[in-house]
Image (cartoon, rainbow, N blue to C red):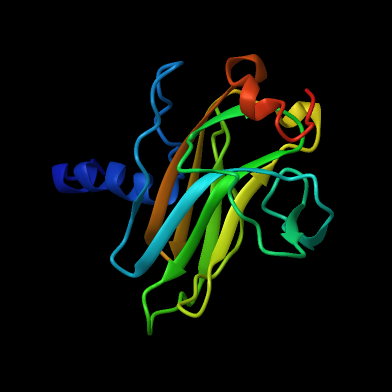
Length: 185
């Protein structure tokens, strides 16, 4: 049996919904796109921070390491609104999100696309109206120092709540930040 032309047009659309599509990589040295967020998000902050403090861990099987950092104290961005990140051990970068009053995510998930990845790293991450939630990456080991475009997204089920791009560059390209925390790479 030969499929109808309507079925042939439907198959690519169904396939696209089932297979995660990596974000389009920016040209090297391109400026990251400005962060965007849904109407249910009251605030989205982004930036870079010194991440040398001790943190707890939580299981996250959808990540390369199998766990995520859980800060013991609130993290402030030392370089707020910055999207160009030097690849240096001890630095962290990411987003802080707060939902609009009266709205909380029911099935929240953070997704981080590393440069060239075919699928994102994921972990549960609800967004609340009563306080901020963070999604971040911290450079702990040399193999994590991947230059290129990193994309952070927050989802509630099948609805994207935010998206923020960061361009990770060599530590030498941004020495003021790379050396400010005592980090070395």
